[in-house]
Amino acid sequence: MRLRSWDAIAGAVVVFIILGLRIVALMLDVDPGAPTDAPFLGPSFDHWLGTDQLGRDVLVRMVESTEAFTMPGIVAVLAALLVGVPLGAGIGFWPQARLAGVARFGLTIVGAWPRLVLVVVVVAVFMVSVSDPAAWADARLYALALLVAVSFVPQLSHELSEKVLTFQREEFVEAARAHGLSDSRILLVHILWANCRELVLRQCCLLFASFLLVETSLSYLGDYGVPPPRPSWGNILSDVRSQVIHARSLARPESLHPVDLVEGLGRAVNDGAALAVLAPTVAIVVSIGGMLALARHFADTRA
Amino acid sequence: MRRSLSFALVVLASSAVFGAILWSVPGAAQRAAEHGDGSFVAWLISFWKGVATGDLGRSYRGVPVHEMVWRGALQSLPLISAALLLSLSSGLAVVLVLGDRLGAMGRVLRALVHMASLCPVFLLGYLGLVLFAVPPDGPWQSLAAVVILAVGDGMLSDVLLGLDSEVRRLRSRDFVQSARLRGTPLWRHYGPHLALPIAQIGASRTAWLIGGVLVLEMVLGIQGLGLIGYRAADTADLPLLVAITVFVTALVAGTSLLVDVLRVLVDPRVRKDRRSVARDGR
Image 1 (cartoon, rainbow over the protein chains, first blue to last red):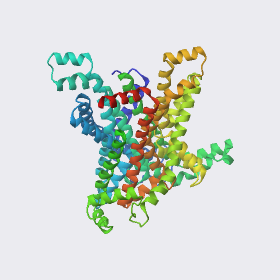
Image 2 (image 1 turned 180 degrees about the vertical axis):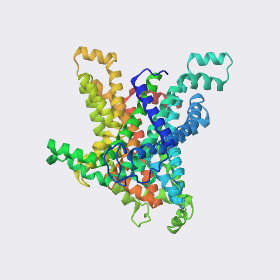
Image 3 (image 1 turned 90 degrees about the vertical axis):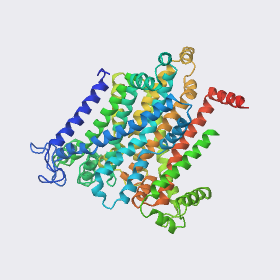
Image 4 (image 1 turned 30 degrees about the vertical axis):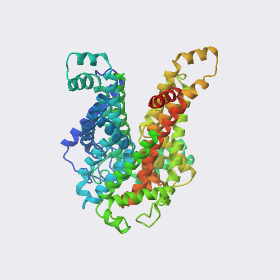
């Protein structure tokens, strides 16, 4: 599992950047919701990425946004592992057991639910059920994480059970049985740890990327993600939506004259709005891309 | 037959689970009782009677539920199918026509496609609004939505990777090599062998596409199932929300049922296995 490919290097860099930003955010003693300067300032030494429509530092908000997905994302991964690995391993190792049939049917049902539909329905129920939704923002985020984990369990269990089932017929498993090793030792040490850990790691990367996608999407939409003024890459984008809409004139055919285009771009960057769009856009794409690259690396290692 | 039964059970169980979740909303039981359904079981039975007769009752806003679901489906289903078709056909075109012919340029092109495909659907919709002024309705909006759904949330990237490995596997098979040597048109061999993988890739992406449609309809303001469902979730409109969730679950389960049917039609080995199982059973 050494870092041998570009995928692994790119993924590892992204993971270190995310963790580094999270540590910086923990050390920062700034309120990301408080205005620090005039609105829509361009990039400067004081505000590297400028300020948003309320005069808040975009860089500080970008860094603080890692709170919205780092811990909940890790919780989602752990929850999926806790449920999905025993289920998948059990179904694969004892495929004829009656319980395996029940579990397989349960996973088919959960697998048929579109992830975002499940998340929106349950979070909506949660929001209606609590008297003060703002006070439950953290709990909502972790509920979101658990729901994404639940929706990911069928995929993880299915892949793992297929893999375990193929190893059941391998000679080394029969040899281990002949040596008198217990089923649990064969399953845990010889199959899961020795031969399936790359598959599990790959699924962890996919799940983290999936959680990031769901969290930013819902935070952008406003009601079920991270509530403002707490920052998230999704709600930073939605906050400046009305301010940057004028930038669309840049792409109209009548304004495609090079001089107009350069002037328009310069104006958009200077007034800070363009950076408030560009920074979260790049952050989301790079983070998801990095996690997927790492997942691809584990898939290649497995192959 | 067994697969159809499993499909029906999945949809039934989903309606019970989603119904139970929504029944737990404070006040939901009282509101349902006002509409004549005293208990959860009574409500569930009346829901399935409604599905059988085509009358799902009225939403809490007084509009017939089946009308709202139908109206939303008429907006969302064409978007989902067009996006699926566009993504699969463009992926197939890139893999079969371009292949490895363009060398470094082809690799750069593929990298760009993968990068665009990494963008979440909401981000592409947002950038479409900001940069290209996607209109609030009309054919340009639909076209933009189809392109965004066909590319975003990793759709095109997944399709490209899946098709690429299938085509490479097919090209290395002996019968394709000999067909190439004899000068027989290759599409005759590709067609039946790629039909099933294409259907499987499409089916595996359907659930993602439905999630993407839900988000994109809210970003672009399209009055489809997503927007209707989101508003129903906001007001905890039990009848409408259950109808929409069961409809999309049936859509996902139905797609996977269709792939199984196609597998039996396309692959003679599966047909043979099924016949021998049936014979053994007798």
